[in-house]
Amino acid sequence: MTAVSVDPTKSPGSTTMTKEERRVIFASSLGTVFEWYDFYLYGSLSAVIAVQFFSGVNPTAAFIFALLAFAAGFAVRPFGALVFGRLGDMIGRKYTFLVTILIMGASTFIVGILPNYATIGIVAPVILILLRLLQGLALGGEYGGAATYVAEHAPDHRRGAYTSWIQTTATLGLFMSLLVILGCRAAMSADDFNTWGWRIPFLVSILLLAISVWIRLKLNESPAFRRMQDEGKTSKAPLTEAFGRWKNLKVVLLALFGLVAGQAVVWYTGQFYALFFLTQTLKVEAQTANLLIAASLLLATPFFVIFGSLSDRIGRKPIIMVGLLLACLTYFPIFKGITHYANPALEQAIASAPVTVVADPNECSFQFNPVGTAKFTTSCDVAKSALVRAGVPYENEAAPAGTPATVKIGATSVAFGTEAGADGATPAQVFSKSLTDAITTAGYPAKADPAQINIVMVTLLLFVLVLYVTMVYGPIAAILVEMFPTRIRYTSMSLPYHIGNGWFGGFLPTTAFAMVAATGDIYYGLWYPIVVAAATLVIGVLFVRETKDNDLHADY
Image 1 (tube, rainbow, N blue to C red):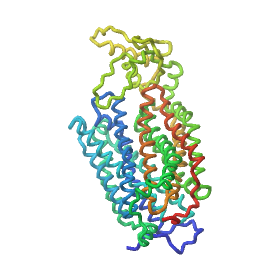
Image 2 (image 1 turned 120 degrees about the vertical axis):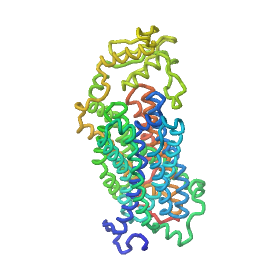
Image 3 (image 1 turned 90 degrees about the vertical axis):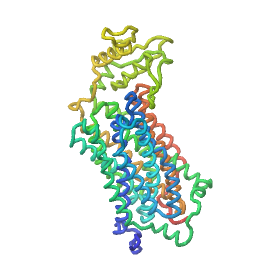
Image 4 (image 1 turned 180 degrees about the horizontal axis):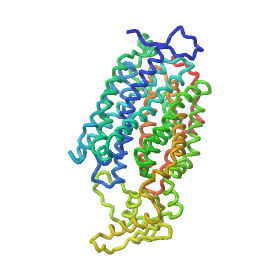
């Protein structure tokens, strides 16, 4: 088989891709789309998985635990970057991401046949988390390989444009997972989907795995790596060279804190937290929320390539920094706008009848109990549990020690009493019922009214969130590849990318949702991405250098 390489007769100023270059980009991107599809299925189905694998705990804890299991895959991504990055720099890019896709595909398929908590008990979530860890390890080796492979085939003046196609794969993988989920939901009743239909998207991944492996078997090693092999200059200890020497470690740290951490939180806010906000906070029906997210992704995805190509002309750094700045300045008004257009009844109720929990702070727990052993029985905990279940935001007000909780709903107050109900209900049950009745009377909706959702405006606001994603993510592969020498490029760029996206980004939905549950403020979780993006903006502006004119082959 003839090796894939850049056409040596091609004019340096040409902007036309050769057949070989198109093949490299298509093969790398398509395989990565399928791999992201596998990974995102879990995030898109977190609410269903919470019921299937984490039953027996209160709904808030179950959902947070489901998000933590989702985040577990992100937690191990840096370790996957170390393992597979080392292999990629020692034995080659091609064989390494053949292994990663096999691990990812097999792990995803097994989720589709895994018995749930009701069938095998605690073993079910344990196996699920182990599979998520395997997926995370595989994905930790995937991105660096794909980005490096494409960049090492690209002409110097087109690396931003070429690698931006890799950047579309995460969004396209999410888009594909949403389409498959929506198709399954449309083909069956909600009960059937929640009972067994949710498994179908996981099982379908075996077909995608077969296609992806077939495509990647047709690839050959990158010209830069082959040249380095022929000259005997491959690294014998990539981890030591990448992280044991301050000259390179300094660049790794700048890549993490001056680029990737901010890129990660903007990405996950725009594509994941927005979905959780619609379904969990605003109570928009899941299918509608998925369609809204899918529409915004479809509209915004071309901008990955637009901003990647633009970075070849004006630089990678300015585009990324502007994206971070816009996110910091506009997240609060955008999410408040989403509330206004997606659930106006909730917005009106918040304005006309604000809710305040007046309670002894010592009786208020952080209600996160993934193993289901703790009991939240104080008046404060009962009040907050009822409000969280109803999706009602609230403020906190301290009461004297030992004072039972009182919930103020506009001009109405509901106090926790000590008397049981006439029907034998406990004081806590009487309080919860009275609170629910008062919330309903005050106009708080049980769910978003589909007739009142302004589809155009919600889609537009979601599009803006994803547009920020394209600004920070479109040029990121090119700038990371250009920051490091060929002999340790796979290892060096993979670790900061996966710490940033695996930890700063991957834990965003869990952290933000827990912050909202703890404070009662539905927008409080936005402080997490804003603070991280602002810190990255400052470090990036001051210390990160532009890389678009770097010679990719200058230093072995």
